[in-house]
Image (cartoon, rainbow, N blue to C red; front, side):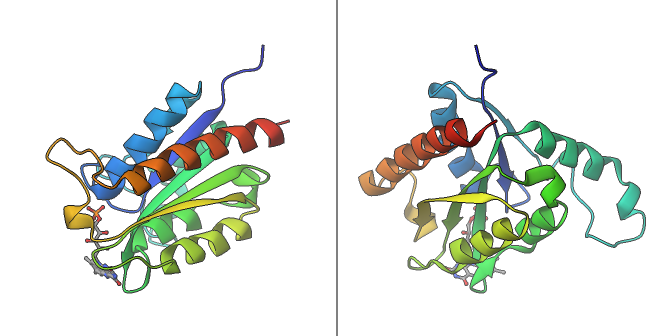
Length: 181
Ligand SMILES: Cc1cc2nc3c(=O)[nH]c(=O)nc-3n(C[C@H](O)[C@H](O)[C@H](O)COP(=O)(O)O)c2cc1C
């Protein structure tokens, strides 16, 4: 029998106790229901230095992060929109990945917004994922008006967005199964 698919979550907010951390949790949980193993990088506990900062090339967090990326078959990127694009945390997380870690693997994209829906962050992450030779699935999720998107138990209020969580997860697993050698 094939090994289970490993899906890695990468959060564009420092703290996993955030809207983007919660979006990752919901999608990774659904991927788990579909038979995948899931891992998530915790920037709050193990921050990545800025690429090029003193000591950054030998940083042990960076090495472990890259090893986790190598061990994964697929990725979920979830970023807040900051000034019309992905957060610096997400961009720096992607800057630490090269095609030798990610080539030929599947990416799924999520963005949260304080304001109304926009595809900017999703499109910008799509470009960056392409640059590290990832295959980005067409299903994607943007969560607008993030302050009122969840109830007090952390469940999404919009049934449309809940449906998108299900469809992005099943597409991620289906396409990873097809592409994985
Ligand atoms: C520096 C900064 C810039 C932001 N720029 C935007 C923006 O351009 N558009 C928008 O809708 N929300 C913007 N926001 C709101 C964030 O998208 C929102 O706080 C975030 O999605 C919440 O996710 P989190 O809980 O994971 O941090 C901005 C927030 C910050 C801190």
